[in-house]
Length: 290
Image (tube, rainbow, N blue to C red; front, side, top):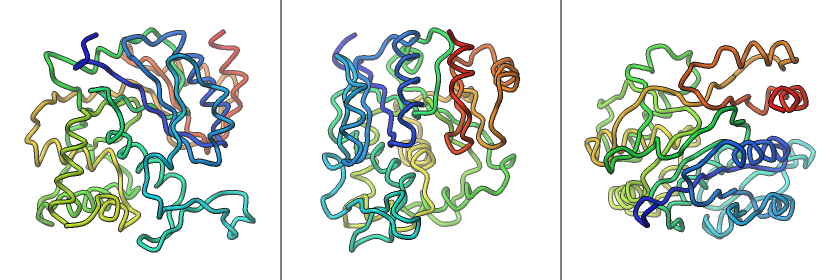
């Protein structure tokens, strides 16, 4: 692969997802080709644990090397110090899922690969997959479900889209009906850098202060709207096929439920994702995939 065509898989994670992340790494090593490095983006307090997953192509990245020093993780007293909250004098307190999104965005500023493939740590690959699928004639694949906003239950997507417009300096009345959210997606590094520069030019301050000023944000919608409405699609091609079959909500799956869920995969899907808060036991899945 040429220097310009290098690709990295990028996974933000945390201690509570460690075993799921381990399974992701195992199945990536078994099924996934066409990438140069796999980066695990974790908080400073989780770095030591995740070092166990490092290899010649897998690197743990400390969020303190990505995010500004004024944003610090501390134990959260509101949950008896079992979790962390990120505090600063510039932003409202942020939770882990907010900071994971910020890591994904910020990583483009230190990455050297041209294509950044984002894969959540609760994903499991079940079929061979070549990351070259994210590139086509020099263009990067942008997941976009046309009109997807119309079919969504009100989960905050419209607020996320409105905040993306605000961050990008788009007119408030310029709404988008498209859904850009799924796991296993690709971004073009130079486009992410362009997006950050655009946001800083529009608002006159560091991008993170604008993006996280309102905690109702989505990095996927932000990037999707930037590409479509600021870049006018330059450097990208659209695809509405979600490559990962995701269980977003529901009860924990037993072995039979897991088998049924896998059987629901579309022929083009190569992985499954079971949201970690569903708390499904990983052992039945490990047995199913051998």
